[in-house]
Length: 577
Image 1 (cartoon, helix red, strand yellow):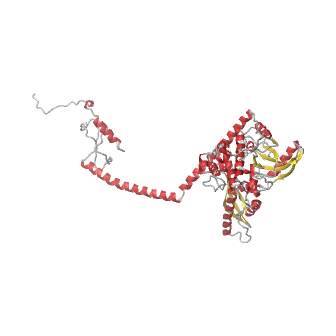
Image 2 (cartoon, rainbow, N blue to C red):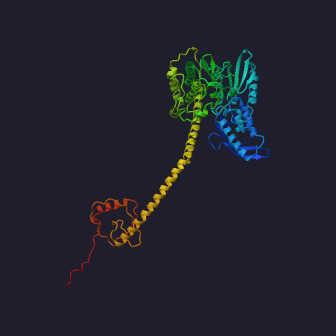
Image 3 (cartoon, rainbow, N blue to C red):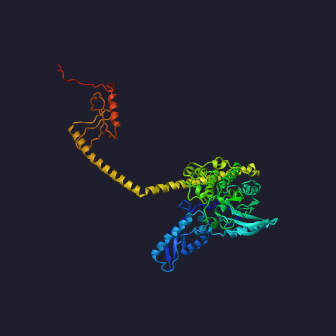
């Protein structure tokens, strides 16, 4: 689909941040080469998976495109002789699987364009640079005052977002940067409200938000022009990188890992929190905080790419916070992302995993409590603080802000309502995704526990105990039946009966109802004689002690008044005729 075309109604746009996993299922030898059959899955659903076939040469081409990262990539070496041996192919398959695991688990590599094209050619076969150039050229036909100087290749991590260095013909000495991006899956604003909001962005002024010179949008994309800063971003400062270098080269494998000074951490953190609070107070969502989206001007931090939320682009850290159901609002997202940024400023590198149980020593005792309140296991499980609460923490509350520029951003009431509705839709999509991930994680954990060796041993032991118990019960039941039959045949004892439920006479060979042992019942009056003319009903076998209690109650409550008066003929006295 061309980027400037209107997407079909109800079309679900692809979320590029959903992780891809790859598993080599088999290999097949064809004459002079070997092909590897790979199962690729997007997200947690097995239904969203497909097969691809790749040769070693395809892996080698991918590896060459990723060499700019400076990482030591674990691709198995080439072999010219003996590369069709069965043992060699099996060993190479293991090495290629290890290579796939490495690139899909690296947060920067897995989002690279060439990795996406390698694993999912059906969705990522387009030449995004060429498409972006075409669309930007179309824009300049109607706006002749702008001039493109050069494309900035792979400047950001989004391959659907392209950057160009440009100038204004009215101010040729001022360098500008143009960013152009397609819409994302979280774009819920109506087209009219979307274009209205985009065109409103240049009117935003704030000491800690980077100025936008020009902004416009179509039905399927947006274009934003802002000043180009030679000093680069906060991430460039942390990693000692050059702003124009590709993203992989700058941030994948830093040469020197060193955090910022304490006064920089305090000042930059406070400025970023003030900018976030300003946006949220006006009902404007952000959700894209990361160190490469924070521009530096001297000792001042300024947020960039505030248009991303309007475009519906997924966050850089989305694959992290979708794992935690308590991070379910856009403010929670900004706080969570602020935790990542604060960790990066403190230690000079991103955290290895989230959540964290322990934190390395920090420049101040006031830093770690802030990190614990956001990135610890307890925080991810129970919830993170608000932006206002972070501003009151000892690390930030005593920072003096020197900038006196007055913030200004007027959003019409009607547009505020539209932004609020779009925000609720974003949060709903997030909650639904988190729910699916949570259910999948529970199911996987249960299956793993059920299939563990320890659990199998427990089930075997329980099965043996149950079998022994069953055999013992059967052995005890047989002699009890024999004793009961003998007692019934000799007439030594007989079960209590009542007129309402008499027991038929017992004969040898008939089964006798077994009554469990119980304490002797209280004394009761003797039962009345059983009348032969009263029909009898077969007794229902007693399952427990309830029938015995009912029987005793019937005996105690018996009244002679309910019996019919019997008529007798006395022949014992002599009769005189």
